[in-house]
Image 1 (spheres, rainbow, N blue to C red):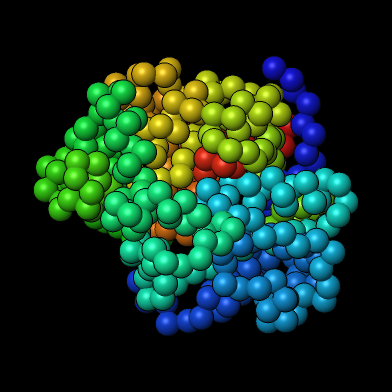
Image 2: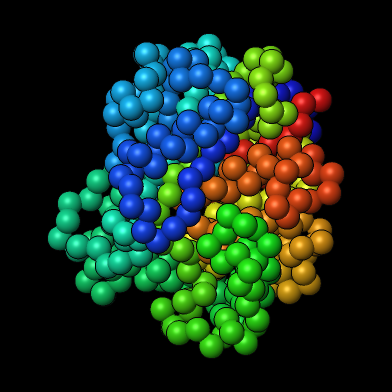
Length: 371
């Protein structure tokens, strides 16, 4: 593989608020708190920021956040579609901006009140006009059959994957028990100190039978996450050890994105020390593990059952507890966990972690230490 690193970029600061079910603050305030924490972590001031990246569905406009923080001007601003699927792509756009000189320091943020405010897991209005990045543009195909929630629409696709791989909900329990073990030892996780057993997973109520039980579903979380991206050279003068962007890509489908991000980073699946994989629902991880080439196609059931992705496994997955165990910030907290693993500061640190993958399906990156 090529060892060329086209993107001269690194994540230099990370920040987050508490993760709760009732923040008691506006989403603008949550975005500001997470942003200030990320800047403090990097040792930067608000005047250093000249670029911003967020989601098309984030309620906080960049101009609003600029005014609240006191950012003097922006030379680069992007809002990405696809909801949580775009979380991995935020790194790609921020890295491209600093690598090309469009910005010096890019602030990436996401804040939402997904429990006390708009609950993403609730039924959607079948009559609502679809919008870019809403994830609801295909409502015409689902709504007539009563599939009005993310869990229901996902399950329609998941059934085909389960059938072709002889998977059942019991297999998903193997994954969920493992990440709840990680969450139990992560003080930032909603399920801190609350591991579960296989039997407890199987006793949780059905959400969409026979695909998803309650414990297969991510959290509805209030909170904010932010990080700052700069060039590797500038990162050397900042406060933290940089998490270098070895590779980053955006596309349609994890398999397409994975091939490009591995080639760009100059590493392969067997070089990974940990992986952060988007898990709004447990079944998503199973298809992603194959698409990311972390296991051979058709073998994901046995791969997960072997303990390969658990604590002490070949490639631990979602060491913060994932979106199911820690909190649902549209995948952004998987990125901050990847940074902590590279820094060596994660609550569930993988010893000697050098290459950490983060994938959200439509975007992915590989982070590592400076070489």
